[in-house]
Image 1 (cartoon, rainbow, N blue to C red):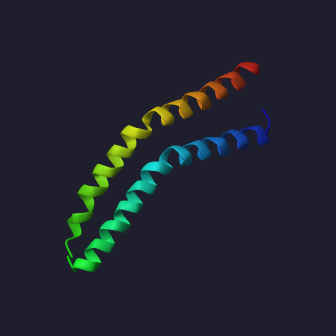
Image 2: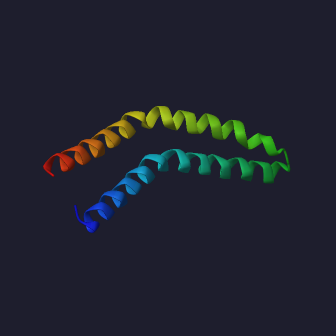
Length: 87
C-alpha cells in the first residue's frame, strides 16, 4: 500500500460520509429556513419552535433515504474489502 492509495481511500470515505449525511442536513437546513421566515413574518420569537419540525423532517428524510444510504455504504465497504483482498 502506498501513501497515495491510503489517502485516496480516506478521501473516498469522507466523500461517502458527506453524501450519506447530505440529505438529512439539507432537509434540516431547509425546514429551519422556512420556520425562520415564518417566525420573522409573524414576529413569533419562540426559540423552541424550530426543533420539532426539524426533528420530524430529518426523521422522515432518514426513513425515505435509508435504502439508498445502506446501498451506498455496502457498496463502498465491499469495494474496500475487495481491494484489501488483492493485497
